[in-house]
Length: 425
Image (cartoon, rainbow, N blue to C red; front, top):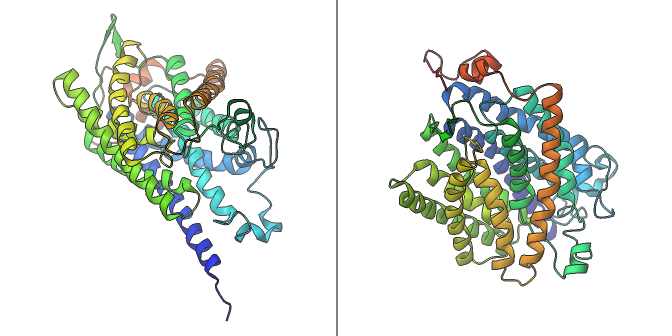
């Protein structure tokens, strides 16, 4: 009988944890679909659901073909490298499925977990451009952004590039590396910059701004959005906890505790802030407060104390409410608050690592440099992709199609059969 050594048993258990974490990140796609469709109008709900099932299909496929090789190229110059097409040399390398791969999990578990993150970045864009973007145009954007932009900028930190390597440019010249555990910057802000570009180039929904005044377009199903937030909250334990990339008891449990505390803090302060400003507690603000806290803690969940994580989440809850009002004044129409949740609090969470890090390994300066470094190429690349699509295949549906709703105009079907859901806005 073959003897199972303690080291191999540990390898098996850690590999299982990463696989379970990947499944938790995957189920976040359902959460995004529920939140986005619930916060938008009924007449475009099927369109939103379609996008949220199409994004992982496209994202996982292109990440398997080219993204993984761009993001984890091995030895490279720190800026741009390519490790080859596909999911590595697994068929000629049995070590890829043993502790010799990295001591914690297999090549396939590695790819599976990372592929889930790639799909999430594009999903963030979906909600911000909802109810007026052509389906085909959005899918083309997703393909290009996930295939090239996300993995290239991701390699700068997670792939051992110039921002994250201990002997890289940032550490050599500024004394600290850039740190982002699970993607406050690399996933949420990268998706947020893409969302901002889309919102600006698309313009607002019809009826949103008339005669210089902003008109509220209410969510059609807050219970559905609430279900979505709870699903996302649950999935975030895999999103952050799996990013420990091991089963180390201290690392994993610290991450889960800080993640949870930031979420509840965001709910409390977002509720209080909206109550003070609007004189009534806004349910959608409480929901986005939860997500804002989760986004903000995602960068530093492994490097801050439980008390610090609550403070980070509490500040995020205030920021998300203020950001919603700010973007409203700037006439940037974001139906689900993606910019306020993912972009603003992705930036805040990234900088918060330098403020609250208890290890002394990271600084506000290098974290801020990372924010700027990701902002410029991601925003410009997204603008370029959207503008090319606009000039070639068109970006926005017609006025008639938008008023009718994207369910009928893009899919010839309704989300709620037998109900009249048309409106003039």
